[in-house]
Image 1 (cartoon, rainbow, N blue to C red):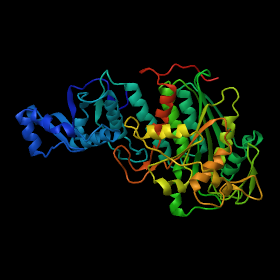
Image 2: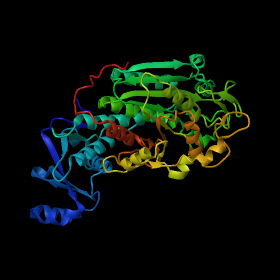
Image 3: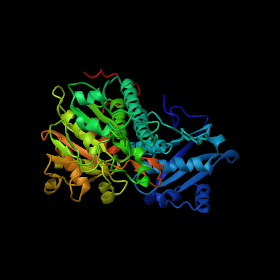
Image 4: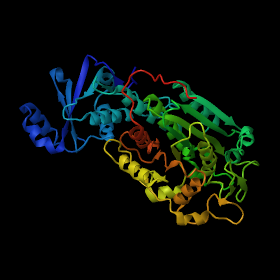
Length: 489
């Protein structure tokens, strides 16, 4: 059963969309019947990027659409195409027509990207609105298309965005845990959670310290899935469901988007949903420290010194730099797994404003303790296949001294510049040096809106992470049925 925006069967009314590349436009136009050449001229269809030409048949009904491509088909082209169709046709027609992108002149990968882009354009966060957008053009996917993969990647993106967009009054640590549990149940994964005072007794002092100021109690979510004989991969997602800044209170304007401060957790769950649905050959673990950074008499304070799970004492430089604290305990815990030691650890977090100053909203900052991995992920992220760019920043060892403090083993913030780098250096202290580690400092928010990416919660680096794991560990065979992999140990 495909999602509402895709179909496996053509409706009696069906419109085919054919792509024309700009470089081939002159030859294409010359080869067309005179009627189409005339219609193209009258409508200014010249093969330029994002141009469309609707051809009508008997009774003036639309029968074909031509779409121009600048070069290689991208996800955004599929999104723009879907948006054009929704604008051009009325709801009554869209309810009884299927559309199909012809494979003529397209590679299988291009066809998949256009279909995924079509799906992404359907995303709306409108569950709180009385009036919803009902214009949902349906795309027919033929037998040569990997239906399962297309649907999986679209749904993983939607899950990520919806978790980020959901307001904090409806998505606190309890609700984030419920979403993670639901995902685990769907894929027959093992689920556990360590909550509230148990965090203290089981030695997660930094997670407990950050979350103790809120009535919505902190916890550490733990999902395991896959065969223990497969390579072990651990995703760690920052789950700060709302960040007031704590006692170092944020200005009110800066709090307006702080429901997105669990964007790292949303990306981890979105990636996990795709990894499990695609049945990738890995032993997957997902760790999410879920907290709310609130203000109360129980809140932690600037210059408090807290002993971490690893044993390092941490002096709190600023209570608004809480994400690195909860990640520190979770990363330490990830490295302690003796039964299934991770060969790759990836943490994802809306961590620093410094990364946004350096790279803006669209480019997550990428760090790794393996230079080869850094280069591999960067190259893959900018490829036509992935088209979800991230950008590397260095783990510059000379800046480590900025985290020194006279009173503790390490400061949570330090006193220097290069905040994204020093935050990454802080996290590195809690990762076993023998483990390959990747850190993504992402924004998880779309400021202006783009094709297939409306304003609000955004996936940045999600396709790259899924694609990297696929490339390194191998893709599963295409399937339509749900995964039948055994439960994790």
